[in-house]
Image 1 (cartoon, helix red, strand yellow):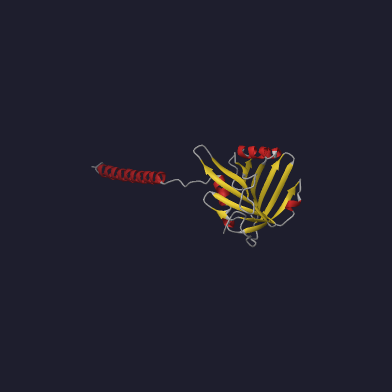
Image 2 (cartoon, rainbow, N blue to C red):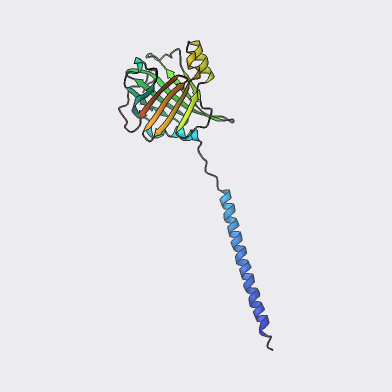
Amino acid sequence: MANQPQPQYQQIRHTSLTQARSAWYLSAVAASGLLLSACGQPTASVESPQQQFMAAFKPYCGQAFSATIVADNQPSPAWDHPLVVHIRDCEANTIRMPLHVGDDRSRTWVLTRQQTQQQEVIDFQHYHLHEDGSADAVSPYGGQTVQAGSASKQAFPVDEASKALFVANGLDVSTTNTWTFEFVDANTLSYQLSRPGRLFEVHIDLSQPIAVPPPAWGYQE
């Protein structure tokens, strides 16, 4: 008779184990559900350095800024005038920035992001238009990125079409040009032209917008 409580103990133990296993099973199912749910969530797209670089211009869109030549190892009197950069247009994949040199409104910088199945590039072109809107003989010219670059800096080695244009117009020395844009800091955008023996760099002061200049030649309001 002393052993009679044992079946009751075994029943209690069996019930406890069953409950524990059930709790573990439910926890496992819940965890699996959470895992599957997480796996089913779409992954947030990560912008490329070139996308980030283009987006960095947007806060300044529609505004104009003064600029200063900070390096020029072949100075020219043509640049001895106030410089104004107007970040005029910011479209999804295109940015247009007229550069005014005194009363000369012939220059416009154009950045265009291009995406193909093989690669993503940013194309940079200089457009030179005369006061009547006609294109200069050496226009457009520029280059494309060949590396991903960074969100703050992109380099544009001269492209083949520009090389041919330079040679045709007796500007063979320019066939090794590289242009660079860089957000040096929160208040400064740098434009640079470099090649062996040549360095020209302009700093654009983004800290203080100035009055928007008249439209660049060939463009209308």
